[in-house]
Length: 288
Image: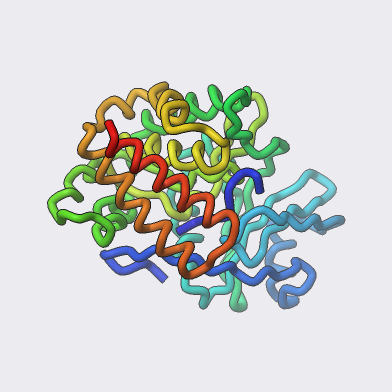
């Protein structure tokens, strides 16, 4: 699961289990010489390197500057258990530009798998209740809902959530053919005059309303929203209104179990915030 903390701060098996393990970071200059040479073959001579600290998903996260501009680098060791997410991002990128930054190149050499993206000079989304970013995020999620799901290998939402529902039949709520991002951490949304949605490694095929529902949990956890406020923002996304009350309750309950599992394996303030948010929303829905 692509995760990197709330905004105040190999291919998986068919039945997906929530796992969070921080990836050990590597400085660009510490990459093997053949890898550095392969990157410069794509970028031209590199004049300056800036480490990018947000996120747990990449061993390499850096912005490199050349005489003609800059490139954002995102990389994992070729034997990393999540290296398949690199290929997923490469595969999906042509279908999600310009909502996502354009992938410029992709190399896999000498033990490293690296993506080079066009850079975006923006700030991470502010999920606070009065934030001017919220309408832009809602608009971006509506735009995402208008993108046809490409005919590429993607995980299915019902598989990801199957282990976390009371009734196995409830996974039918999550089935669909819509393209979903599913990791709406504010660090994955860069704001300029619009939203640039990054980190597509966990893109999923499923019910159209699911991204709006994932956003509710992030708004409660990271934006200090109450459930009603978070739902009001989700309601700006047309697909939200497709979800039935039982579907929302099943999804919220599944996420309490997902975040209980994640926080149990890696307890800290942000996993605690996400766990509390999921439970808050689930209790709110149960009380309706």
